[in-house]
Image (cartoon, rainbow, N blue to C red; front, top):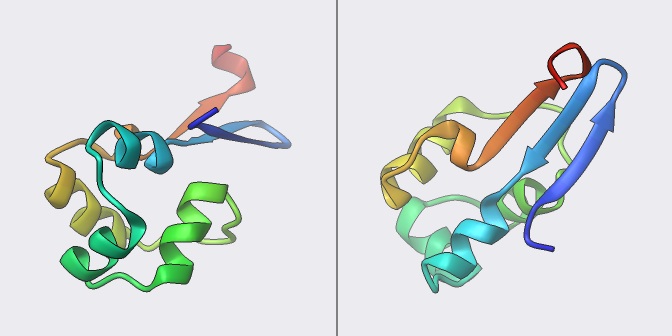
Length: 81
């Protein structure tokens, strides 16, 4: 699946960057160069292996894909599910 789901105490994060890459036929290396984002940061956004999220990285990715933040990462509270 192209969307990584990470459950936490009060909800679920959905990491959708891999899906965007595949839909737009963009490699990680191309994205890395175009957005000046470190390879490890992109891999963490794909795998959902994050402790914190850099809003500047998200802004660069949104600009590159011409999308919204929720197209890259989405949070759903268990209260709203």
